[in-house]
Structures are given as structure tokens and as C-alpha cells.
Image (cartoon, rainbow, N blue to C red):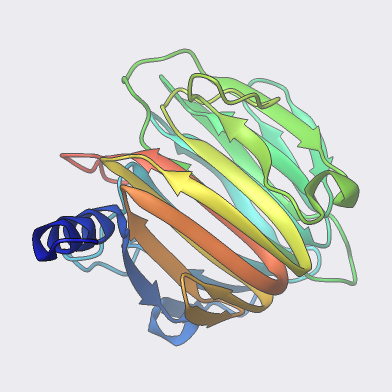
Length: 258
């Protein structure tokens, strides 16, 4: 027989383990049409500033961009920021002040640890097709680090119905790109299946649906929607879609994007 007090304690434990989650709909993001660039900002960036939406944990920038054929961002500088670019469709060409040149294709990832300073350009490599990408910035654990660059091509099979860690600085998480932060970026192509992710206390998760239709923690999400989760707890995703997931630490003082 279960006492009323035991039932009350179990209820409190379940409430404690239930992660706090909020949905950001695609239409709620800041949107700018620059002609050659259509961009959505999930957080304050450039001409969009909202003091209540500067970051989610250490995740400082999450931009969903479509760049017109043959166009792009000219050479510009960055410093003290971990920058990860994930190509969803098309081809992105990169050049930087360290002499790196590369073309990132769908499923591929480009990594720039800006550190003490780096200048780079990003252009649509195609003359007739647009390129869609998400560019994500994470505040590093320290400033003044040595700049680094990396590019990795991942296959569809590596992320089909599973979380693929594309970059990480978390102990115990293996990834081919190492971040200067206790954070991990995952991607997945969910095809009529389900995935879960456990979130520890004082951790923040940002789940982005690039396309498709899924239910995450009971909330229906479509293309461009995102779920912000604060641990402890877990994320349960069901359905079909292209997903990006960040697991990041807290951040007391967000830095301005550089």
C-alpha cells in the first residue's frame, strides 16, 4: 500500500526531473532579406537586438541562412568565438587568413576557432544554385586562444536515425572536431523514428528542426522551429526531420558576437 506522503514525494521527484522547455516558432525569429541573403536569427545578432534573447547558455548565435548563387560574405574578421557552420543544401566556399581554402557540401561541417583573430570569407560555390546553412557561435571557455580551422565531411548514414556528434569539447563525448568549450553539437536525420537525449543539471539544450515534422517533449515542431530546454531532464523527439541539437553549459555574461 502506498502512503499519501510517498505519492507526494514521487510527484515532486517527477516534477524535478521534468526539463523546462520553451518553443521558438520559425516566424518568431528575426528575419532579414538582403536580396542575395535571406537570414533568420534565433538570437540577437547584427541589426536585431533583444536583451531578453541574447543567448541560450553558451550558445550565442544560431543563424539560418540562404545565400544566392555566386554571392556571399566578403572577408571579415572574428575573434574569441567558436564558429560552426553546417551545410544543409548546396555548396559553401571558405577562405581565411591562415591560408585555408575549402568547399563544404551537404552534411559537411566547417569549424573556425577565432581565438586571437582570424579573417575569412564565405561564398556560395555554385553559380546557379542557392546554398542553405546554419551558422552557430559558442562562447569559448577562455579568450586569447590560438586560432584554428577544420572541415569535416559527414555522410547521411552517419546521422540517419541517430545523434551524430559533429563537434564537442565535453569530456566523454567523441567528435572529430574539438571545441574550446564544454559543449556538443549533434545532428540527425530522423526518418519515422525516435531519439532521446539526457540533459544534466545546469545544462542548456537547443533543438532546431531544419525541415520535416517532429514532436519533441510532446510539442509539435516544423521546419524552422526550435525547442529550448533547461536541465535536468531529457529530450524525446519523434517523427521525421533534419535536426540540429546543442548541449551547452550556462553562461553568466554573454559576449557580443565578434
